[in-house]
Length: 418
Ligand SMILES: NC(=O)c1ccc[n+]([C@@H]2O[C@H](COP(=O)([O-])OP(=O)(O)OC[C@H]3O[C@@H](n4cnc5c(N)ncnc54)[C@H](O)[C@@H]3O)[C@@H](O)[C@H]2O)c1
Image (cartoon, rainbow, N blue to C red; front, top):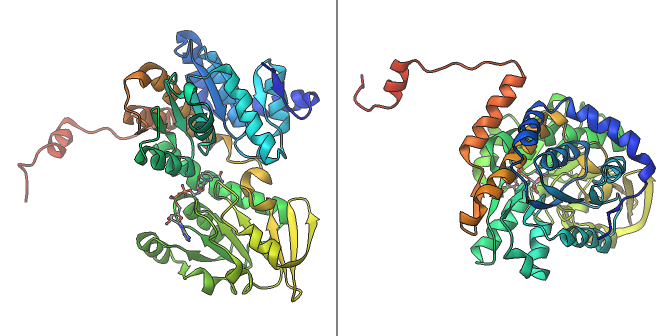
């Protein structure tokens, strides 16, 4: 078993400093780590974790190891690995197989290396490990306690597997915990997507027209932040209730074909495929910017852009210029991969604190209960979700109101009316 594959082990010290900075801003995960250190609830767990290799993830891995788990970590996107973090974890002696800029084969080879620890828990951000286990290593599936899934797209894939009767072990949809989705997807993606776009381009949001494609948790968060920076927002949605919400939040709502000629910046956050495609590129203004913050690089139809382009050049780091035959230039950021992780740091640690507290407690839950659970997608137990909220509030010095006995009785009875 190869110990690790990272870009440059010499980056370890720099990585440790940044991991420590994040640790200081993740108090909930820190308290769980301390509890794990004394109770060792993950003893005997072998975790194959396929996550964005960031400073926050490093702190999650530290907590799992403190709990007694053996962990092998790989990146969950070819452009999201922070090489100094991978180096720091490798220098600690952990199994890490991740470097920024992996090609597709290298990406999957890394996941396969992690499977050499014979995991009994998988931890995914996008369901790639689970998919490989099911397709290529079915013998591993039978030994699993279960898995955890971090993101919306992964949960969608897993539900499709469960509906097909193909899912061979139970999985916790960590993404769907309220203390994950409402904060990570909305405030985390909202802020870090703007950060990634600004890093890549130094784009001025004020006065620009920004087209937000998808008004789910991520889209709402990004629209809110872009609006706060002074942009005029257009929302493109397929779901009538979300479209209505966007309209009443004060944004223009229209189909992509109408938004295409109006936007200065287009950002996809749908989890869907080809939401911006040839017919839209043909309508866009010169120097329109295209970015994606959804999980996979399929939301913008890049093959169509390649076909339409007379030339393709690197305008600057993370910006590819496609010059169309009529001379218009369209700028694609970070090869259409998650812009917030490819061109910025990803979500702030304060937000990942809650997401990864849910992960850590869900891994513990899977280790303790996985064998008894049905082979389907399970929610994070509500006690875990509430506990994460309570710990986060306490860390922020916020106290909440308590029901009086009279109020409790009132809220649990049907006798009293007007
Ligand atoms: N960048 C990140 O760090 C990050 C963080 C969390 C989630 N994600 C990813 O972002 C994506 C969105 O996640 P979410 O939690 O907001 O999901 P969500 O389900 O809450 O929202 C997605 C929205 O897109 C809409 N949509 C689907 N197809 C569309 C189309 N063709 N045109 C317009 N709208 C369309 C859906 O109706 C839905 O409202 C997923 O791929 C998820 O995995 C990324």
